[in-house]
Image (cartoon, rainbow, N blue to C red; front, side, top):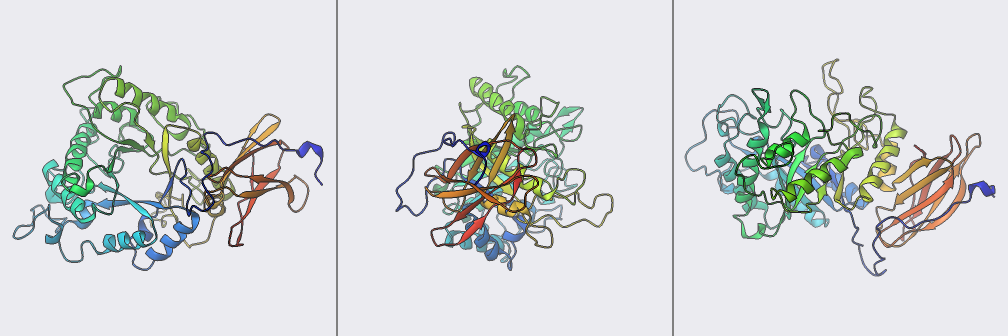
Length: 469
């Protein structure tokens, strides 16, 4: 038996909806989670296995980037293909162009998984104004045709769309700056407008969700700061007043990639134009001011469409495996209790492969739940059963989620006091109707926690061990 100082005080999770009937196959969570595994989901051999794994987590939404360059014929040519090729008609593209995406859509549909498609650059060289590369000044008319082709092919299977991935980053759109001033926001505004127009040409796409933004979290001399990008895209000055006659951009939500740093989810960047998870309120205020200026619909929700915690072996941005698991759970808790956030996302399933260059060996993402060799990190368990533990003086506050079973159930919280071996029961806790639970415990230095859950089928799961942060 544990000493009295370990007694916990249970509390309802914030903003949790009422329990659904036990007969329901799937509860409807207040804030759904999406998954992004770009390499595996377009890989013929890994696709089905990865979708099964994602579904086993309890995730029924995936986001997939659709790189225009990878689908267009002769993408390296400066001349647009002629003959029977019609960029707005998917049937005139090479026969194998769509096979990987077709199979993903079919496999996802068979598993009850919804696919969010993001249409983005790089683009075919012939679809740029300068014809010098695959990202500089894409031609709006050509992009509209491309969006029309994608919309006709997948419009009856896709309900959520977004235009361009991280348009404030030079690897996706150029130029970012011109004569020292942000230039990419204007390019993106036009691409978004024609992209939506092309998608809406398909009757089945009317009424779908269209997300604006997909911006990265921080800026510098080469990357436009997200809030600078936001304002200039909407023709607003630093006081959020219209600088010229720009109509309202219609959207159903604003998508943002609120990555943090090795300092943790609550990290606060010093530049007020950056938007990481710890300062998401900056974006909320910007959306409200833009709505008041009639540049956007009022009250636009935020979609965190790409997020992850970098881990070792990246020793610059990455954290240890246990800390990755802990930070990921804390980040999801922060998103969950924010009523403005409509969805959360995990990026990736497996870490990016190391690069050949010794200086840039880990220039990709090490935010996967698995290593490059496929070994499960602690974050794998933590993603299935998130357990966020944060210290507030003498108290540790716990928040968790049974992701695979978004219904009322119960979990066991276990504790491993510092200096003692093995785990002991702290409490059995009932969840809300969407699988959320919370608790409090007296803080002790070095104390670790974990959660255990038994599924209705009798399968037992254990979450990752974590201490308070």
